Image 1 (cartoon, rainbow, N blue to C red):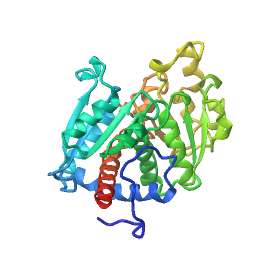
Image 2: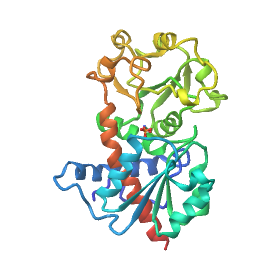
Image 3: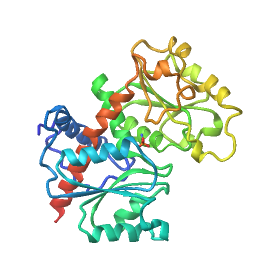
Length: 317
Ligand code: CP
């Protein structure tokens, strides 16, 4: 596989978050993903890189994109994939996360991909099991492969993130995507603005490497990329805005608002979309939307992550 950053050596046997990664490490993952992208367009979508390895999808929260994307990424690299679902597991009998992971590890697994509602769950696992651990979303903390596929998509379409102005809009406080995006985008040279109502901004937001705006109308004309976040109703305690209609009026990406955006603005959303709330359907499916390209690119990015952590683990043996 041709890699741009040839001198660099990836040494992490897990991926817990993007905060701890250097720009060089992020770039290396993106370059590696480029090498894997064409495998998904072949008639036979297979490469042997993880043959004989077993990947467990350990998901304690629901997922459509991330779970299936990891499963496809692992299977396209010829790994065996085990799907763990909380509902049909012994978690319902009181088994802990660590006991669950240790029991799976006792069956001979190589990589655990974990999604959990508790921030730090991936880190906890990585300290207590020998298998590689990849964070597929932990609480409000990080969703590193979403951050990677977002910057991969922007870099593919714009060549570089350096100097780009990016708005991340909506439910920032509950969003692990916003955090992973912020780290990846700023490390690669973009200027990021968090936009939303004050009730959905994280505490001490001024300490983060972002600008803050409480008005989408003030930023819409200036940005090259806009990433609309899902309102996480399942995590909202109380009412952070007076009504869904009012939120949509001030922070929704409407056809009307899009008329004031740059002609070539990239419209992103990590999914799932609340259509008519975060954005109107005409925008979600419109000419500037790259939402499904994000999903497509996620498979190549996750192939790269699984490949690199496995390679690092093999080097450490
Ligand atoms: N973007 C994302 O994490 O989507 P899922 O919850 O469907 O995995």
